[in-house]
Image (cartoon, rainbow, N blue to C red):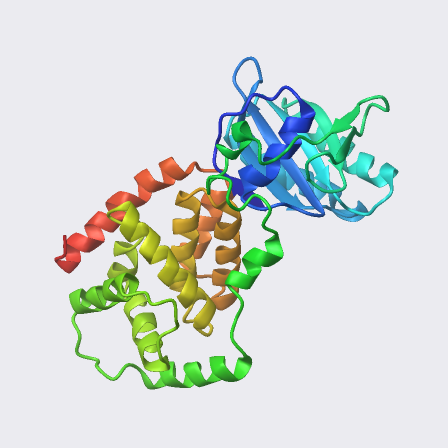
Length: 333
């Protein structure tokens, strides 16, 4: 499940609500169940946005329960359900929406709209799943009033999940095996202090050349992030520029390091992406962390926060003191 940050959007016209979904998620979903949580006494402002794979007949109830937990925690006053794609019969799509509606209604969160479109694009037809005469056309997702909602300023509204997955595409198995062997031998210099390991990572972020370092340097960076204080010192960057540079480094390491060495970098990428409003990339990075090292504590904690729909600003407030304390223990500013 993907959770995105809170945004301000008046929920009035279904065509504009559907058009806003790619901007709110950071990518254009397919075969998806999207839940938009309403806020406020008038139920006319958008809060948390949740995305899950479109469930089959046997998993509809489980999907409803999965979405209900963060909706409750965020105090939603109502919700809108948007189904995208599916290639399924209208009866099944309606059954999915009705199951979500009924489960939310029993918990005191009414579902105001149940909408479906085959895909999200300007001029694409949409239909209500509970009213035969309720239909219209999706508005232009690139409209100025909607682009402002995008965590990336609208630049990635048309990106697909497969495009995002390509950013984290792993190298061939033979390369990962070779790097595992280098990691097993350990870094050449075992005498660095924690402060020096911190500096090694920081230098790598600021010296980004767009290419992967050699296997020895990758092993050193992996070793550095195995030190808890070094990892935690990078949970939140000290400046926006540093945060951006670190995200590029975490992306590269998440892609390049073999399991289980990539788990710390994947967690740091998840944090950086989420704080930047990219809930989709954050979720994908956490998936990679869980695969790299099942049971990795930081990954478990972050997954709990994302499932609960913790706002990026709130997560930053929680993590910043941890990062500051870790830097203090390392003796760095």
